[in-house]
Amino acid sequence: MTASLSRMFDTATLNAIHKEIAPHTDAPPAASWTLAGEGLWGCVFDLGDGTMLKVVRRHGGLGSGEALHHRESETLGFLGGFATGYVRVPALAAGGIFTNSYIGSAPPLAGWLRLAALEGKRLTTDKVLTMSASERDLLGERIGAAIVDFNAEASTRAAAAGTRLADTITRSLTLARAQLATAELHRAADAIAQAWETLRAAGPLVFVHGDLNPGNLIDAGPRAPLGFVDFAESGWSLAEAEFRHLEPLGPFRDSIFRGVTARRGQAPNMRAYYLAAAADALMTVAIQGNAGHPRDAMRRTGLLRHCLAGAEIGY
Image 1 (cartoon, one colour):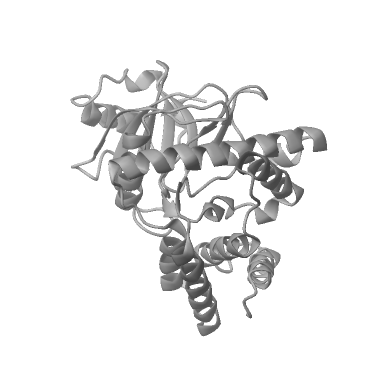
Image 2: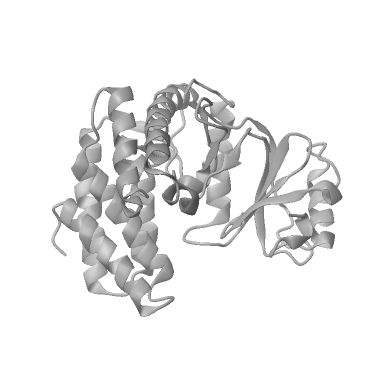
């Protein structure tokens, strides 16, 4: 896939982006870039020299691109591309903000990051769900162990760096509540926030990735550590914040929990887990509302009610 196939950036715009970042990093010409991924908040390009370029938009989902770019830049700055037997993170080579937010035909841009490429392929939810049961169980247990290792190493490094990046669940609830249209959903958001803050105050807190889903994992095979990417939601939180996206993945969640329990020696707190999952479901409702087929809206609402019930919150 070539860079010109990006929905957001045509060839002339990519050349203009290259011109903007050239004084700060020796990236190869845009003609050699290939599109590696594209989402609400921007694109990731493989530069063909062992590095990746992430371009962040100012507007996408909830929140701001500037805030997401700041969190990821700060996090990668102190993580330093570390690796254990179970997890690895990309090293930050360079980064910056766009002083000119309007470059070519691009949407308004917030910033850019140049990262070391991680060996392997990005997972997808479809790929995970179509694996054999044994393959999926093995992958889930590897993910669980990787999460434990990440939280331990990242917490040590974050504490040494003195970072004060805030809790991702609290942040998500605040952003979601501002977009919710009904008093009923506001009550749900407030109840989740109050229950989460009570658990959070009791701790312990760890430094979390904050947005772990198959699309943010790089797999180089069953004997290699898993790569974690996209740290825009990182911050200090309960460990269960790492599982916020798992409830729709069915039995895959349980295999991840087995990996966590085996590596950490302690099972997840299920009430904290369901509170994090409820916050995530509420954020999905805030972003997507009644979009799509009516059944889609019903599924979103159903997931929210299911998670609230698991968290022992009436709805």
